Length: 375
Image 1 (cartoon, rainbow, N blue to C red):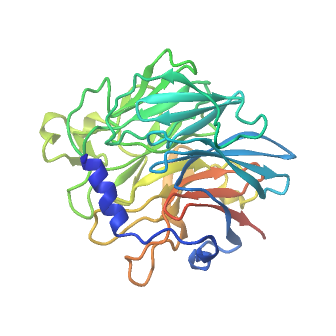
Image 2 (image 1 turned 90 degrees about the vertical axis):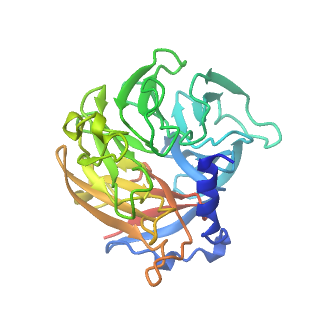
């Protein structure tokens, strides 16, 4: 068994089984005044979400998965209620990442990027899923940090992170610990960010078009070190420290002597240690109050090896221009507040719907929640 598979086995061993649809205790979720949350859909092992075609009549949401190996398409109507959940693909290796462009769905599957054309035309038969077209199979085959959040940037290119194949090591920087981009046909590879241990979420700031991403810190330095990170890519090629420096100011015990921390880009915001910050999005809707506009929501999946659990929530990073000025909880309650150990859900991604409501994927409860605001 690979080390990463052992990590997931341990994580799952301490968590309860997925709850039934009518048993999700949403009354435990704490939100700011005026906000409410509902179970929007049940989707097995829901991870990254991507919005497909949408207009005033409704649209499509695509959802990847980790252990389930499936990709689903959810149709919703003009009232933003889910009308159907259809299987697009199954039997894939950790198809976490989904991205939509020009009527086609792109799916990450460890070393491959696949494309499914015309995914919104007609009824999908689960026994006969659409045919996958290979975009590339040049990505590393390691499963340790091998699952990939993917998205198309403002430049029309597909952005793909490649995690380090280890907890801490000095891998080939041309192959690992980076975020790269490519054309939609798999050509024209270029490294955008270096020294990135394991990013499973990114988005582009609406005002500037700059890339921001979450990064998971290394393990085995204790409960409180190092922090997870929120990083800002002001220009292509910036190096964010891994494996030499963590959090901008913590030299690695093994590799830190080789490079100084001041050689690298410090995080825009240090996040909670071991909280497993995954999907993140800038809030671009108009439903929420103005103070949330163009701020960052982050899904914190939750710790797996900390003596006291942390994360299991949705957080908010407030920005002033390009500077982070606050980091706070927005939605919490998936981790029991009384004993701090019981968990019934794990946020894995967030996404803003066209009406301004916020979706939250939960791969543990097998659910997608919708957060709305009413004055």
